[in-house]
Image 1: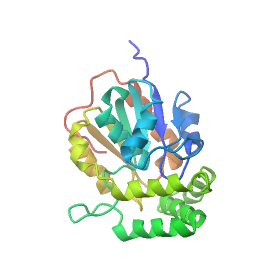
Image 2: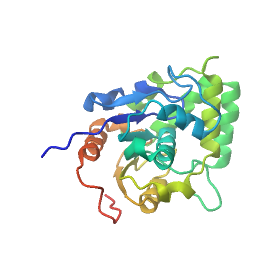
Image 3: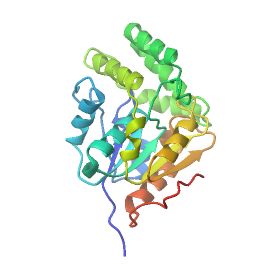
Image 4: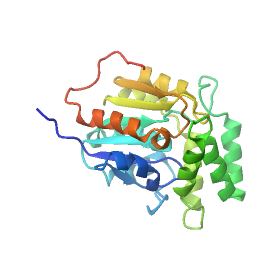
Length: 256
């Protein structure tokens, strides 16, 4: 008996737009990509993660498979915990519960690195965005193609978008979702690049262990944007989760 696929909704990362999902949408024609607040053609929302999540929730069907990448994964986790009827399953790409390091959280960016990005964005936003995309492509076997695709999908740091983009960087600096991970009971597929220089794979390993129903797939020769360097592989994992008929994965987190 065929299980009807659940609706698939894609949430991109900081500074980009829904255009970044084009290679994945070529593999998953039914997937819908939303612009984050203040990105692409979306209106800005408030200055906190909850306000951004609420703006997205208003556009979500019930029972969606939420696919979140980087900052989009932050938002997907928040929505799954706070609005569980909207998120039947999660796919988290290059995800972490906390982007910056803390004494008890080494698997992240040094606080000073993100602080420098924020300061540089205030003075030279275009150059800062391109440095950020370069960092996302580092370590990837298709680095040049990934960099080009990221730059083509950027939200311009113009007067209409700059404040929301700066707010997004602040959300990356301030958000810590570790305390709420245990309340995310939906099946979760984590996808991470082994060579991710922006977010260590150890962050995804922590999530796979901490989530009640999580599984991790790590791609070799891949950086922070597996949706661009491995779109067919990502699409296969997303489609499998969207159509899976069982209540969830085995209770023991699996890694491969």
